[in-house]
Length: 275
Ligand SMILES: C[S@@+](CC[C@H](N)C(=O)[O-])C[C@H]1O[C@@H](n2cnc3c(N)ncnc32)[C@H](O)[C@@H]1O
Image (cartoon, rainbow, N blue to C red):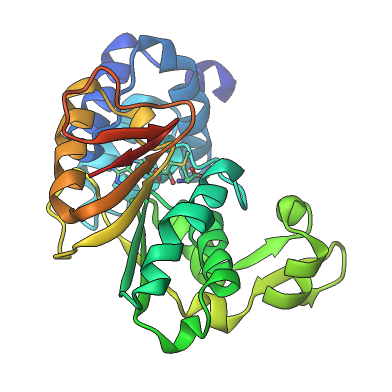
C-alpha cells in the first residue's frame, strides 16, 4: 500500500479540529499558514502509531483515556527552540540592574522561567546566579522553571547536553558548571548538581490555574507568548503582573513586546518591563 499518499492527506476539517483542540488546551494559536507544519509534525506520530490517516489518529487521540497521546500531540506541536544564554542582553541586564540591589539588601530572590523548554534558559540563569550571588546555595534563592511539554522537561531533568548545544558556553563555565559524562561518539556534559539544585522543574500549563503563590522578583517568559493569540497574551500579561512583586521585572523575547496589549508595566528597555 502506498501509505505516503494517505498519510500526507490532512484535510481542512481535521486541521480545524486539531487547531481548535490546541487552542483550547494550551492557548496555542495555529492559523491556516501552520497547516504544513502541523501535518509534518503529526505525521511522525501517525507513523510511530502505524495509522494510515489523520481520521484514525484523531479518533485514537479522543478515545485514549490515559491522555498520553494528547500529551504527545502537544509535545509535537509546541516549538521548543532554545539555547544557553539566549538573548545575552537579558543576562547583562539581570547582572547589572536586577541582582545588585537584591544582593545588597540580602533579599530573597524568586525567579520564574515560564516556558523553560529543555532547561537551557533556567540553567543559564542559575549559572549567572552562581557567578553573581555570593554563597548562592546558602541563600534564600529559588527558581521555578515550568513548561507544558513533558518531553522537554524530561531533557531538562536529565540536564545532559551535547557539546554542540553548549556552543555559547565559555570553556571557563564548561569547566566550572558541567561534568563530561560521555566522550563518544560525541561529547556530552551534565549540568552540575549545585546549579541544578537552584532550579525546580515542574509541569505547568500557562493558561490554566497556577498552583504557586509568588510573588516573584522576575519572570522570564521569552519566546512563548508569540505562539498565543492576543486575548490569551493579554490575560497572561495581567496574571504576570499579579504574581510579580512591586518593582519586579517581566522579560519577554526580543522579537516580542507588550505593545498592542493593555497593561500597567513600565517599559525599561527592549523586552524588559517593570511592575
Ligand atoms: C520557543 S520555547 C522558548 C524557550 C525559552 N523560554 C527560550 O526563550 O529560549 C517555547 C516554550 O513554551 C512552551 N509552551 C507553549 N505553550 C505553553 C503553555 N500553554 N504552557 C506552558 N508552556 C508552554 C513550549 O512547550 C516551549 O518549550
